[in-house]
Length: 231
Image 1 (tube, rainbow, N blue to C red):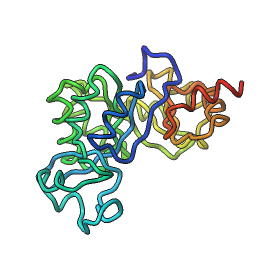
Image 2 (cartoon, helix red, strand yellow; image 1 turned 45 degrees about the vertical axis):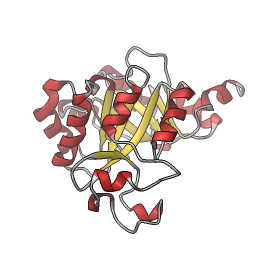
Image 3 (spheres, rainbow, N blue to C red; image 1 turned 135 degrees about the vertical axis):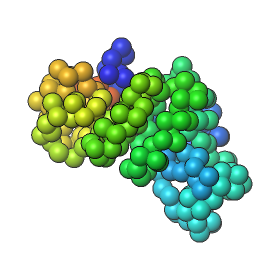
């Protein structure tokens, strides 16, 4: 359990884009965990970005996988450069946990994320979020000895927890509306974390917290403080 020794629920800040400028701002927020999505450049460098289509965030009509990392870094996104997964992990080291969702569920894709985290010795303080149980099993078979953590993004409100644990799943990320207290309890008996996605309403934060979840993903770092004001 990556969230085993921390006060719960942990507020996990979601950012769809992280630039070098916004990274400095994130570090000053004092958040304990960050949730990001990654895509690979043409030369297989994982960058922090929730979309592969650059035309949605810039004037460049190409995909991330059509550009090398050097070409991508020349593009200004929100007046700054994007950061790689390795740069992010190196910058937040010992300051926050990382939850990294792979933009594409593919073993070779995940390989480069694992390599980036391993280079900065951050596999133990991060988790890779995937959508396929079979892929998680393969990842654990290949890199489990390195201490890689894998979480499953799940939309089934009544999962087979025992089967998931046998496949190597370390935790669940689930839409908050699908969470059930029974699922949380069963996951905890198997030493699996349960994280709620995506909560921006303080009242809902209180509700999912009462289920015993380990973490809550949000776009609002102040949500826990606001929730306390409602109790």
